[in-house]
Image 1 (cartoon, helix red, strand yellow):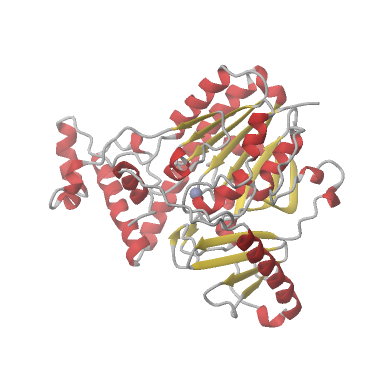
Image 2 (cartoon, rainbow, N blue to C red):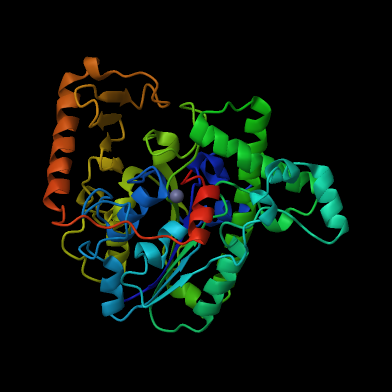
Length: 454
Ligand SMILES: [Zn+2]
């Protein structure tokens, strides 16, 4: 029985349509585009949640975010653990995380033999807390002066950059023999998008502080965003993609030149996209369950694969771990919700029979469920249960017109999926509420600059 290696690379906040291999016009992702030429490229890969904490339980445990007590606290021990299955079956398993939300604090080390939380060792700038400090930090002259005295007063890093992550993964891979499963999470494309190490000019440093203040106002207080600001943020986003792509290229190149390459499955996928004001917001606000957020880029290369293949059937990030286990010839744990999509290229596509994907926004007081097929998206909101939305994705891919009144039988069908899902969530509910973890000040500061806390 063959047990191939698996390298899972997840990129936070990467929109599918911002990669060349998904049609983006600018050449900002040459390494991933070249990789796509020798991989399976999924054109309709759907994430289970619109933000990190809702998307990752789906990807890593193949259960929905709202199940087992929800996704706001640490992952429940009750959830099935495909990673544990791999560890128990003799795989060397390692996780490399750069996000505070995917750290040991949130139990993302569950099932891994080794788990490395990469945390930047930088303190929040002291000037920020001083009276008038924020104004000072947004002034290029202040930075000109500070730089003249050898002080770079740029914002502190809120996550470790791809360079550090890739070095850490390569170090581990160099010492690993036997089948492995390694997961590395890249944060560079996530707001605030700044590549801090490249902030060396006074005007760029001042602008970075300006951006932090402005986007915080946009996120939390509804401040407006001009066309020039929008273009500036998209430029930063693209530079972050370019940087991440180069680092992924470095890792893939290293792997290709190592003996591991003959026998490694490589997956590149994002947890959710990013909204650029399509619905009046910037970023990935939880309530957005439209395709700019839910359709994620996903590439998968099998050992020895040299020809690209485009897979147009809808698949779910929920299915990634069941597919991995299937390809590794390991049993899929009970209670997982996904299925292996390997039949889609193994000559038996009808064996992957998953007509709908489910994506959620989950807070205890509010549950929004989006059911998607290749033709429709149905969105149900617990606060307005009798006012569902239905979008005809083929006629209206931007999901602008609610056509629920025109398709009563479809609406009924989708509502039955919502009801079945809610029943499943209820059945998995633990007796006791999962406590949200106590976070130290450093983590709270990082979450604030990532836009998660006010
Ligand atoms: Zn995320």
